[in-house]
Length: 125
Image (cartoon, rainbow, N blue to C red; front, side):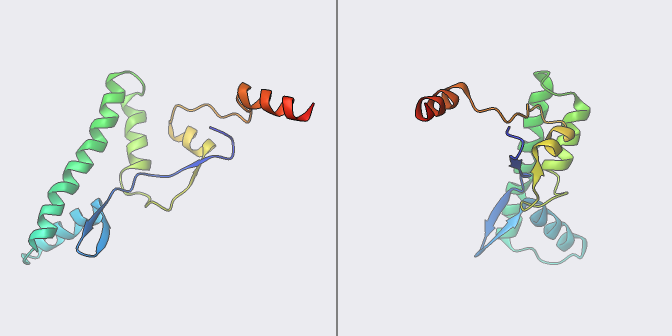
C-alpha cells in the first residue's frame, strides 16, 4: 500500500423493502422483536437468516487465513473485531499505518513500480 492509502471496514449491507441495512442492525432488530415477543415481518426474518450467513462467511474467511498460517488466531480475531464486527460502520477510514497496526499483512511504500518509473524517465529525458 502507498503511505497515503486508506481502507475501510466491511459493513455488509442487505436490502429490505426500500432501504439498506447493516447485517448487524438486522440481527439486533430481529433479536429485539423476539425479546419483546413482537411480530416479525417475514422479510426481516428471512433477512436475519441471510445476515447470519454473511457473518459466518466473514468469520470463515479469517479462519481459512489462520489455517493457511497467514495470521495467528489472535491477529485474525483483532482483524475481525476492527473490520467485520460492527465496531465501525462503512464510513470509517483506516490509514495504511493503522491497518498495519491492526495486523493486516501489508507493506507500506511510496515507490512507484519499476514500469511507472521507466515511463516517467522516458518522458522526462
